[in-house]
Structures are given as C-alpha cells and as structure tokens.
Image (cartoon, rainbow, N blue to C red; front, side):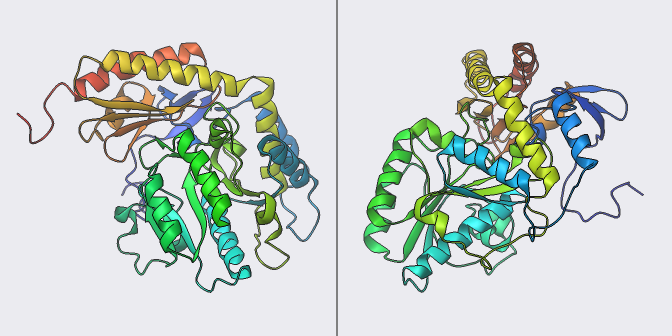
Length: 399
C-alpha cells in the first residue's frame, strides 16, 4: 500500500520526497540533488538551512512558541512596524496563511460597506485570479475549474479582466453597491500575469473618486519577490488593504493583512480574530526574513537576476516558434508556450530542476531570493533544452 494511503486524495504528488536542503538546493531521500526554482511556491525566501533563520528559530523555540492574542506579543509589534515602515501602510493583523489574509480583506471590505449603509456590498474581482480555497476566497477566485462542485458560491463579487480599465469604469457607472477592488499585482496561479503600472495607477485614482477600497493581494508577489518590497510599488501607489503571506516567514506559516487610511480603523475588538496567527515563532521568522533580505541585498538581486533569466530564455527560444511570451518581474517568472506543457514538470525533475506549470501552458519559476548568478545560469542551461524539446513538435491539432 502506498505511503500516502492515510491521506486524502487532494494532491497528485510527484514521486519524490526530500530529506533536507541547503541554500537553493534540495536533496531527496536517495541523495539526489535538485536546484529549487519553485521555493515551496514562493515561500522559502531564504532557501534552506539559512544560518541566521535557523539560529533565530532554534532560539525562539527555547523561549515561547504560542501564548494567544489575549496577551501582548512584542514580536508582533516589531514585525508590524517593519512592515508598515516598508509599505506606507498604517497597521497590521497577523494570521497563518494567504487564504486567511484574503478572507480578512473580504470581511474588512464588507464591514466597510455596511458602515456606509450598503446592505449588500460588492467587491470587484478578476478573471484568472486566485485568492484561496475557503468558500469566500474561492468565490473571489477567477477559475471555474477549482470552483466546480463547491457551489453555491458566495455572492457579492463582480468580475472583470485584468488591465481592462473600460470594464471597471462601466462597473463604477452601473453598480452602486461596489465598495472595493480586489486584485493581485501579479496574478500567480493565473499564469504570471502582471497588472500594468498604468492600470494600477488608474485603478487607484478610480477607487479614490468612487470611495472604494483598493485591496491588492501580495501573497505570492510580495516580500521582495518582484525586486521591490511589494509589487504594486513599481506603480508608485499605496493600497488601502494588502494581504501578505508565503515568503514573509521563509517557510514558517504566516499571513498578514495591512491596512491604510480609513481601512485601518474598520476592524474593532470582536470583529475578527485568530488562535495561532501572530504567534512568537512566526513573528520571529518574519522579522529575521526581513533583516536578512536587507543585509544581503536580496531585492536588488531578485530584480537583476530575474531580468537576466527572462532575457536569456526569450533569446534561447526566439527561433522555435513555440514561445508565446516570457513575462513577470524579479524572481516571479512565467514562460508561456503555445500548448499545454505539464510534461515539463517531470522532465525538469529528471534534469535536477524543481518548477511547475500553471494555467496549463505557463512554466512558473519562483526561485528562493538567495539565488546567485551561478544558480540562474544553471537554471537557464538546464531548462532551455527541455523547453525546446517540448515545442519541437506541432501542438495537438496542428500539422
């Protein structure tokens, strides 16, 4: 009987198990080494066994892991201050995951609407977006495949395409119950699709004019991955609400929702809560992650290496005819092919690379931010032949 027999069948797992890691490398139980270009889906910011993070977590384990939010937690205050200082936001609520952070954002928007006298507040969300798998965040997600079977979905969401300002203006003219716009600065699960800087600026202006909250999901694209602390900062704007998670704890479960302006005053005691969120261990991981990122210049490195990787992949695929686009920002990269390419995942694994495919045709690269030039060169060297092999035959239905 397979080892996974006691587990629910929620994942189609690859036939490999990892025993340990070092830097950007993972080692399986047979001793084989893999260059990790996924980082636990944008989670392991500092790679594996980073000496500063490991030492900090060991020390914290010897002090206190959990006390509950019924008491002051100094590390929450410290991490909260670090985040608001780097985001121009006002305050933070800590939870355990991106789903929880996004759920809190949705609740915050609804409460904002009710306080304005709107009985059935609506939130603008996006096609191809992904915000989580709870019933509310699944309803905000723009993917019918993952929603199927969980109907009836939660009402109160109005959907548009990313970067379509005309559609958003139509909603402003026709739907008086809208209270917020909720989007990812870079859609991750949707195929590494960035909101353009111009679009983000225009949405900020429209939200200001309409009295809407601008809520930007930075769960996957935040915490330095794009080359700035938060991907929306490339557009020079400040959102009203910003969910975070994934890379903030470098592998320790963590989530946060930051608020600014009127949104920062909406939640009051009793409106929201968490048992484990903001525990001292997770807060220590967040504080250490930010400290190391700044000391080692990891954001600038992400911007530089990401641009180089995208350029090399585009150049190496230019003569194939099978490349649609290489896009992204920093170390959040999507390589869209002209056909489904899920077979690349096991092919890459056999070549000692860990990556994944999202939106059926997009190879997604999310390396740890401690990547160096030699790792980027090796990634391109190993990946390009695989990409070229996949596109070397016509896609299904074409002669």
